[in-house]
Figure 1 (spheres, rainbow over the protein chains, first blue to last red):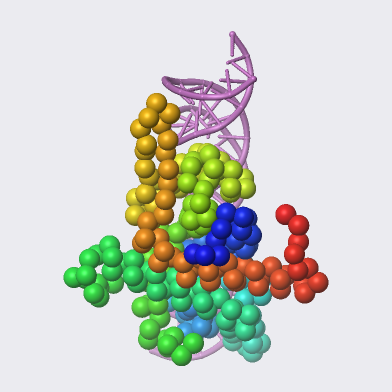
Figure 2 (cartoon, protein in one colour; figure 1 turned 30 degrees about the horizontal axis):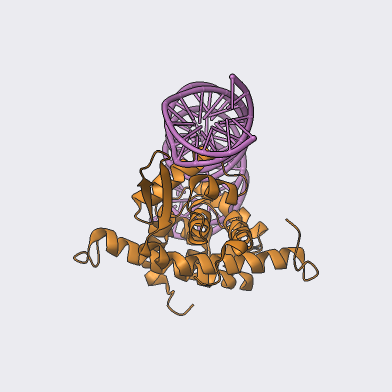
Length: 121
Length: 121
DNA sequence: GTCAGCAGCTACCTCTAGGTAAGCGCTTAC
DNA sequence: GTAAGCGCTTACCTAGAGGTAGCTGCTGAC
């Protein structure tokens, strides 16, 4: 880590805090992934994320919308439909999601040992 | 995001959760960065991270140690010294830290507008 | 009529992260 | 002797994250 010299400490920490302030909690990135994979309806998203509740989902969706990461669209009709989609800006989070996902895979492998390639559930 | 098709949803989410379970909270990555930059002593780390308390720092350091990300070394002497250093395994988190840091920078720039390059504090 | 689905919202609770303040035993410096 | 630094620890508190349950008004299927 050549760029991380003592003097640059604060300048490395502040952006980290900025990022963590936005994507904190355990749900936001998961929700982004799920919407990206094509689940655009509220109930659909809810069912795609194990053990999330509708209350939490509603709150997180509002947060994500406030941060300009997703867009909520209401299709009027007699059956009112709501769809969520990720905004282009959310794509900038891809490196974060990839890095986290990769590390999660490695970490699980390290904890389970090399003999546990694909654990169920 | 070509790899993210609906069918692969769960397989993308689980690693994400695994990772978030380990580096949750707003402090752990910051602490790793600070130790990496050469601050190895408790008080030093504490002073390097704005507004962290010794209580929280002590707890987070224990967590990081339990996750095999840092090592605590006690140098006996009459003045007992404790040093913390990141373990090689923690380097695997570099991509995560980089991605987060970069995104934090971009995000701040986007929020502040292009006219706010380097804000004070 | 009844049940299910849609997209949430409300009220209630618990649990944890985290903040505040103080103090411990030790050592060195003044 | 007093103050300050070291590496913490304890006790107390608040804020918010998150879980549980049930409900709304609407529509469509049986």
